[in-house]
Amino acid sequence: MRLQLNRIAHPVTVLGPGRRLGLWVQGCHIRCPGCGSVDTWNPHVGQTLDTAALAHELADVIVRDRLTGLTITGGEPTEQADALADLVTRLRDTLDSHGNAPVDVLVFTGRTARAAARRAATLWAVVDAAVCGPYRPDQPGADPLIASSNQRLLTLTPLGEARFAFEQRKVVRALQTHVEDGEITLIGLPNPGDLPRLEAALRRRGITMEGRSWQP
Image (cartoon, rainbow, N blue to C red; front, side):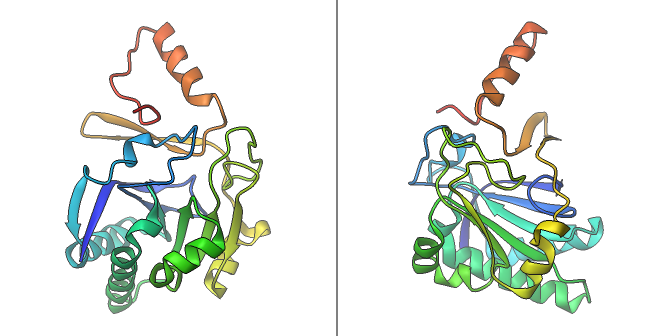
């Protein structure tokens, strides 16, 4: 199957517990106001990848870097549910064949849990936890994994419950810097106004940003 992808980053430490692999899918028709990843909205750009080949590539990264989880965000994962479900299934089969410890899967979706489960049943069946609901910049969230207070974190499997139970979540609300091929990516859940403030602070130091993920 084919998956439209924006980017991959690892290790990610601010989008779930432990050391994780982050997967940003390309394409979103929800388009929440204030979204920090506007660059992932257009479904016709990014990379088109084969899920079978990608699963083996990601499994190698997870084993090599001793990663403990996979976070799928975007973009809107439920709009590529079948391809993502195929990827997760293949990835787990490959990791099992290596005797790797279980890797949990967390999905961020702008849809409610009910809408996501209905629209993306194949994906919903293979994830361990999900953060559900549209982003509302006027309702900032306090939880490390909740960008706005209307959203909800659900655990869907015993592994999800073990990894994401409140007392076991060691995630700190922060932004993580990832540098690859000359590009700097900020990973995490910024508070409202954080990104424009960051841009202004860089400008005062003589640093100009050529592209901004939160602007068209």
